[in-house]
Length: 151
Length: 288
Image (cartoon, rainbow over all chains, first blue to last red; front, top):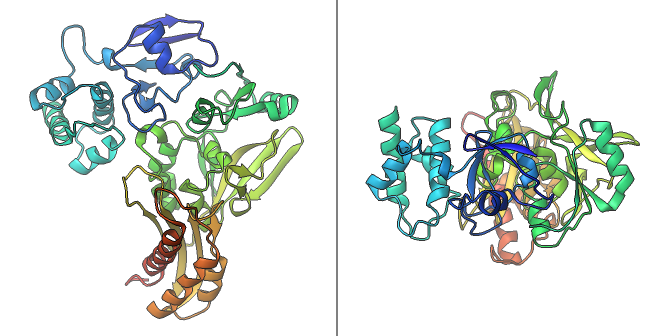
């Protein structure tokens, strides 16, 4: 089975029962993507599948055949961070960091779909990304900052 | 890693149906995966064969044909929510699909898969029943039409046979002056399943209710249509008192479970309250 991960072609013999998150983390070593709730509720495992954010803990690896997958590792361009990553750093949009990869991919996905989201748009989009440190205000501020910088 | 199974990738609908026919109860059709993968993780479903419907053409379109919207079974929830065609022809449907879980899940979950899962707490059947929608179910034996209100038998049990899949959903376009609403009671979080939820579609002419349809989810072992409420109001002058009385009849339609979203008694009361509010919004609105 072939797919593209963060712009690189990948060939793998994923068994049918393998989940996308396990292909990414265990086989490809892309451990930025986290698994927390394992039932699609918390958002830690968010990746982009053909440009749309999905829960990689609920996707079979087989569903990514021929697809273009982007993980948190694929956001930065070499040493240059994505503007949303810069904004999270500047605004303190993270504490313990476990939810952060999912938050970043979800926020990137929001700005791709809607470059100038209102605060309500951002809340509705991000509501499935849980942060137990409750850094939500800073996360929303980071999204607003990144959207203004990019608009 | 899930259990060991064979993942089939049929390229056409007849090939998919032949696989389901061949493997019977040992096979499950597979589309978005959001429901079935969770069931497999919990060992509640351990099919030996998954028949992926992903590569099948012609099941991912939304089109308006005469007076009905036709939504392919592989259309994602998010695409119903954001479709300009759906928003224009049946805004209730776009609104209701947009209330399911989160964007991430709506990007994965399909219209056909959600209905076949037959979870009585899923949002879409409320709107689909209130709009009088039906599904086209196909198998290698042929095709049949099933009204969404007749699609569900019990918790997670639908009228579909093991060799049958939903091919598309037909949603009659509501009358131009019909008003509709979906009210989802969410005392916990915005992305939760409803404690109870109600969809209503109604028409009022010169102060008289000429047509009304009401459906609830998360209130019984299946989504339910509140026919007694409808019968009480249809043909009658619309007043706040008439609505209040009619909403009481919903008690006989619901049969909720005690769980962490509320006791059965509480949910039954809330079913009445939310039915009343939904009727007020559809029938009593100032410009109705």
